Image (tube, rainbow, N blue to C red; front, side, top):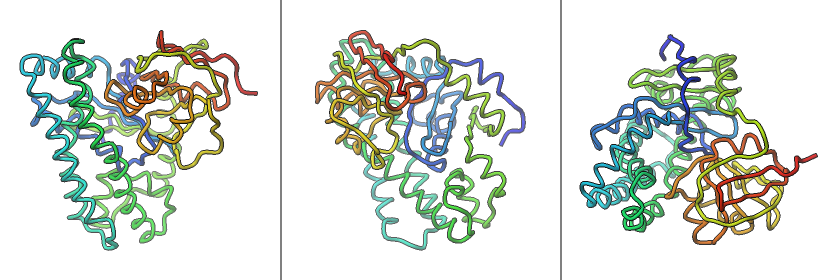
Length: 357
């Protein structure tokens, strides 16, 4: 990890939340590849990448100017050659199928090895470039071309929806094994990076327990080209203040499906651990996935921190014809469970009407 602090640089950026989910650090840190592995496939890397990991949720942020530059570049490629979109969709499906095959080997295996992990990493790194480029570029295409290409891209996305959860579960098998072998609490071992799991399998070395305890209170990874800086403690808290800044009672986002709904906000990160969710409640989360579907059918509207036209929430909203606002950045942070909210998906605004008592 880089010893030089880039906190002031990080705080000066406008960050866009790329994804958010109930995933552990091992999965999150696979996304180092954004700053290192895209160029060989697409011709361009992202310069910076920010990973923020907490007990319940991990999120990936990309600097807006960096994302705009990358997606403008990829959109230009598609505009020149529309067939590239079909190729990216095809490659997304093919690499996903390969990744599922790799994970199938681990399903009932107890003696997980370094070679298994390296094969998983390699397969994942082949999958991310076409998937990421396909998913993000559609939001930057001219409307006419967007409408033409979106159906084929949606089909590719739907075939890979379960993939990231499956990768996270596969990596949790490794952290469970390490917890058993070392006696560390599982909650602490969940804060190991993908590289640290690899090092453990090579030489049985781990960060100190003190280091892991510090991370368990929140940790961020700032990736800049081939350097990675870890932020914990006061640096992490300082960073979070900037990311979660909010004033007033309205949040803005992008519209996935128009409409107007009012209901009780339910902040859900893990759809398998839901205390209460009544018909007509408003689902607010970092990002939806297939396992959210039962809640989405009951909800009057959806609001997410991250996402674009090819996100799961957007696709389901169009299918169920329910109001949906995406890319609010921090709705799941500033809205509290039980708040009364209005989702004005005609104008892309979420209003907090009454705070929960």
